[in-house]
Each structure stands twice: as C-alpha cells, then as structure tokens.
Image (tube, rainbow, N blue to C red; front, side):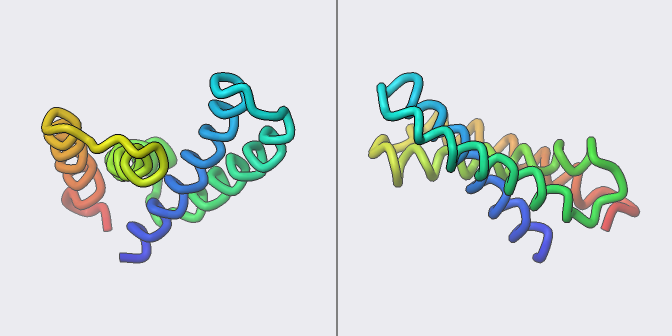
Length: 108
C-alpha cells in the first residue's frame, strides 16, 4: 500500500511539472510557470527514488500503469475532458501489466 501511495504522489508531481511546461509552451502562460514545474519534476524524481523495489527499471515500469491512470484523472479533473471507453480500456490493460510487474513472484 505504501508503494501505491508513493506512485500516486510521484504521478501527481510528474504530471503537475509537465503541465507547467505545457501551460507555458502551449497555453502561452508566463515563463514563471517553469519554476514550480521544475520543482515539481524534482519532487517526482525524489519520491519515485523512495521505492522499495530492488531495481530502478522495474520501479519505473510498474509506476507506468499508475502514471497512465493518474493522467486520465488529470484529464478529467483539471482539463475538464472525460476519458472515453478507449482511454479506460487502455489504462486498464496498463494497470494489469503494472500489477504483474510489481506483484510477480519474489518481488514484494
């Protein structure tokens, strides 16, 4: 459960940081958006490094499913666009893959 919380926090920090760059570049917002964006991306890297997994690559792979789900929640909550059935289907497949990677024999 702690690992899922870390992945959720990492996803929020990563998406927030990337969105700050998106806002500056694509939405013509102030370059000052880059400051919290870079700080958020640094927090993302730090939180993900707190993972209890024995290998960074496996952590990143398992985290990917949580990131995809979190991105769709962001799409809905922040950007006001409801995910469609294809989004939900794709995210479900990715979450299944992340669970197989994270909970495979001898992993946790």
